[in-house]
Length: 249
Image (tube, rainbow, N blue to C red; front, side, top):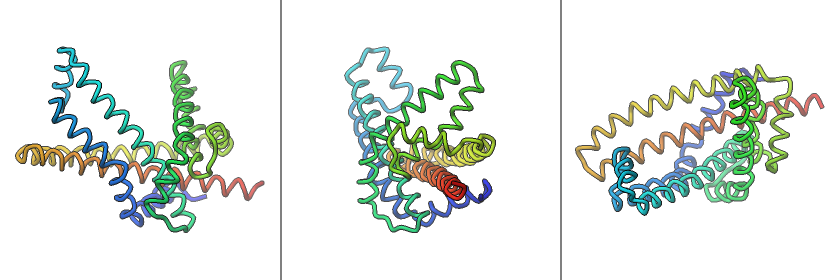
């Protein structure tokens, strides 16, 4: 079994080797919601935190409703994009060729399973944390591969949850170590993106609306790549556990 560093490195290799495809997926799944949010923001005048607060105080529910609709659209596109990055990682790690259209088609086909598995695991983990911290942590670790299994192994939501539970059986410490390393690395990457975003927004403030749009798109693209890297790492770990289980079966 590769070490945590090897798994994170494998995720990095998948991301770098498929950078072009990932940018294509971002253009299909990340770009449209960003442009839609920008256009709606210009039309409603709600473009930042203070303007959202002012809209609430003024009771501008029409504009706030439009922003809510944009957020829902962004969520759906985000889930499709994440499912597509899981599919890309699985195909890359298996030595298979990929194309943007095929990945999007696969992601759309697994979307309901991804949504249901995400909701069920989120509810279970959230309930565990409400009770006590340790039950929530335990459930988070044991169910951490469920969403990935819906795409990587074409499993239904309940089967994916069962699969995650089965694969992590007896491997709580190992899986916790992997997730902790993944979260810390992703957190560091997001901090770097935030720092870059501050610089970009400062420069963009001089250029007005076009500059703000460019800065927002650049930051969103970087965030998408980090999410894709995390998906590749989770996929690598899932496949390694599945291979290990198959050898001992």
